[in-house]
Image 1 (tube, rainbow, N blue to C red):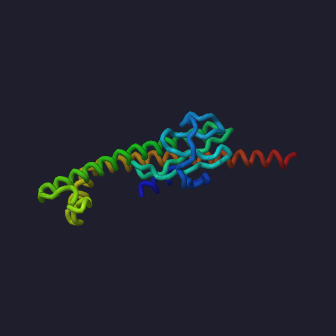
Image 2 (cartoon, rainbow, N blue to C red):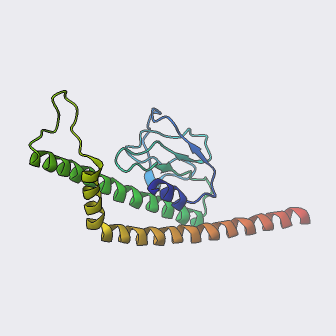
Image 3 (cartoon, rainbow, N blue to C red):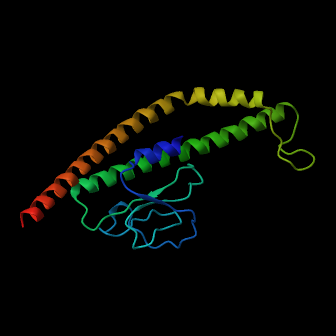
Length: 195
């Protein structure tokens, strides 16, 4: 669900290509400050779209956040308004990435500590005699999940508020860009019909 939100937050007006392989070679990137007409590349993504592509590219899920990173296409003649939209989308993506990477790390750590403490209380080791990792039953894990959600309730509420604010801004800018493009097209059509 978080990945769907992250992708929806970026907007769906641009065509996107799904990149299945992360084996593409990385080149020196530019991040948000990439030259116009060039690809930005964030460090650590492990992939880069071909130079001739004119679309946003979605990469493989990040191992920490489970979100698919997007490398946004920067058109050669990007207007200031289009640039604001792209930067707002990049900021939304960065915030989502940061929150979920940190949240998932905390979740995994606390889950391991919980399992260890419960197994220790039962006098068991982390691995059984066959070398398999010992687990707890569903009822015991339900205690952990309930406790974790309760402890992080305010954090999730704040994230949701911020998510809606960021994505309202993205949606508003998308409307402005669509209107500007429509007006530009109408002026172009009127000029060509008049000739």
